[in-house]
Length: 234
Image (tube, rainbow, N blue to C red; front, side):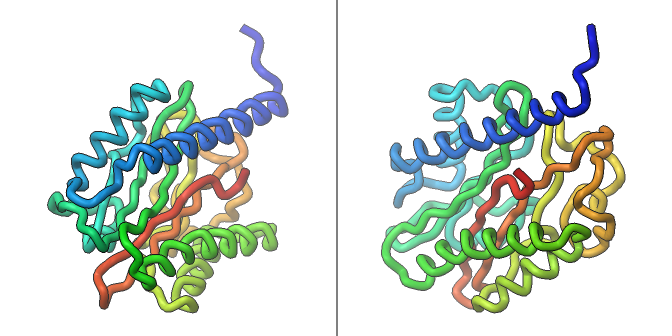
């Protein structure tokens, strides 16, 4: 079988990653339309409902990482933690973090919902997209930016808006499944302190590195947070 020229291979990768994200966005829109995030539903029940919806309406058979729905105080916790299940209330906040695989390509998508009209929760939800956009602009303006540089800036942007940051990293490499086979250690594949290589480089497979940016804002005092993630580099 003839090898795909490098420039054509990259075109396929870009198109496939963007298509996977577009389909993940459609999935989350369907989650909202179905009313899955609602009072009286537990985090685990909501996660199963999203999984079932992804399979039934979008043909998703696998997810490359654990499927997360978290509400209330559970939204303070990063991906690595495993909080107790919780029932959503009438005045609540919740986020979903899913990694559906579409035709062999990873999506990684996260969004936040506010249940009720708490102004602080609404402000945090709205600030998520603004911090993401500002972080992306910071990346685009700096050709030699490192993962550590971007993490430092994103946490500063959060603090400027009065929020804490809920994780030790703010993103990671993404590509063809399985993403977690990328080698070189966590600082090499994540945007965090100690990630001192330029982000614009080749990934461990020898191709252009593409990144996910994650924004996890938290309010420690009021015990809630929110989450937003999608492709940074495409």
